[in-house]
Amino acid sequence: MKVGIYISGLGQSFINESVEKYAERLKNEISFHTNGIQYEIKSEKISYAPDRFSTVVSICEKNKQNKLIYKFYDFKYHEILTEKFNNYSLIRKNLWLFLLVIRKFPIIIKRLFKSESYNHPFQTFYIFLIFIIIASAVLLMLPATFTVINSSYEKGTIGEMVTLLKSKTGIQDIPLISKMQIKNLSRIIVSVTALLLLIIPNANVLITNLATEFICANDYMQYGVQKQLLQGNLELLVDYISENEKNCKIHFHTYSFGSILALDYIYPYGNKVSANAEVYCEAIITIGTPFEFINSYYPQFYLNRTTSFGDTVLWLNIYSIADALATNFRNDSKIGDAQFGIERSSNKPVNINYEVVTLNKKSVVDFLMLYSVKVHGMYWDNKAEGLSCLGLLYKEMKNKSLI
Image (cartoon, rainbow, N blue to C red; front, side, top):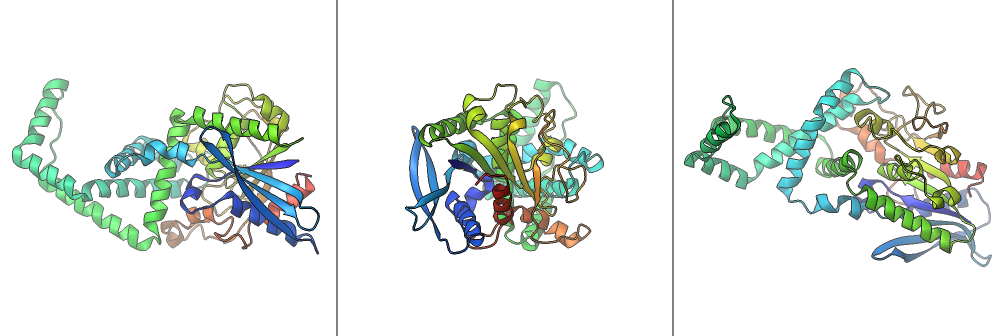
């Protein structure tokens, strides 16, 4: 029995993307390639651990005693990964984003001149610049912040704090920013923010989602925040499937950040691969995986991986050249066969190119409007009946006997 584990992108939780939609798209592709046969999907919810649930979607053939064609389980990780960040106040969220971008800025600047294998360093620089402007604007636009600042200046509190800081640290050249300088800085930041919100369609949603993804993904990759909990839950789900699906072979269907979780499971850091993975996992499908982005800005993340099992897994990779985050696993930005995979691994993904639009890399308008980032969400339409990258995926899965 072929079973898929669907792991969506982090941002997909904000637009109500679901395993039902993904299964519906695959069902449609199966229907397009078979004449005179009708298919349907059936859904149920199961609990694979205390307080942990998965939606199970079966694609069945009608009129043949509901013959099962393929089955999906989804892995819901969004709440686990983002629960700490979502509990932060607005000020704390923006302060965290501001400090995080400041910490990352040296390597962002470095990549402008030495991009490694990542082909969109200037777009990344622009996104990070937007992050820092937005975070600064929110912090400075809050009326309460201005009230505190004005009150502090009137009472001399800020001056007293600087004097105390000098006495405690021994540093005498700590600058004191004047009240007028803070006002001027806030006017500039607010103006730039307003301009960005005007020129970028749905900028508030796009930037908020990007910021949330970046902060939570950063904590996972940089500090291992929630990593053990996430990987433990994924192992529990695989164990549940192996115990409840007869003679199963498991395929990971992953999009964006979801592919990072699956690759972590198949190529674990410094650990032995689980027995369940070795016995039951047959393939991994990565769609729009930000592998090169991570390699460029988190160069230590994929080092020291256990590759013995991962080299035996069939890896299908769907990418778009226009997508600023997707990886083609090549040393150039061209369409073609993959040239590398995980470091020290002999397994190279089977590349599947999927393009919806052609972007002009020299277009300033496309650059400023973040079109190359928006393409990251164009592997399918929000409605399941639209065409999608799953048309190409189904053909490859059929050729590889995965379905």
